[in-house]
Length: 146
Image (cartoon, rainbow, N blue to C red):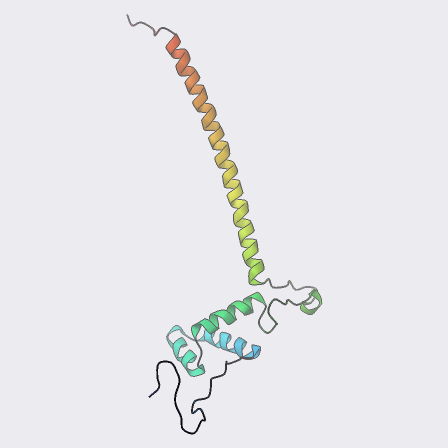
């Protein structure tokens, strides 16, 4: 029986359970598994993952890497324009996509802020005009009914 601290006493001195090593998957395997997962019907995806010993988070991460064009390349590296061919557009990394999304959002928010400021300026002018009209109406004698 193992203890909660993970230490076991053994008379022979050899560890019966060697330390597990981290699994590494080749880019070809990752691409094949993502393609197989996407083509598998919904009810059978779990059995495919169990058969391969994978988690859904693996597939999600690999699909994002594939979509960003980073699968099989070292972290942060992109292919040069010569490698992708003259007529092909380079795929953007997830950081570049996020940056573009944030820039679009910033532009939209700047436009909304400009509209809000213009509306506040108009409201201020309308308020000043109404106050002026109200003040001049108080100065005049109201018309008498006959």
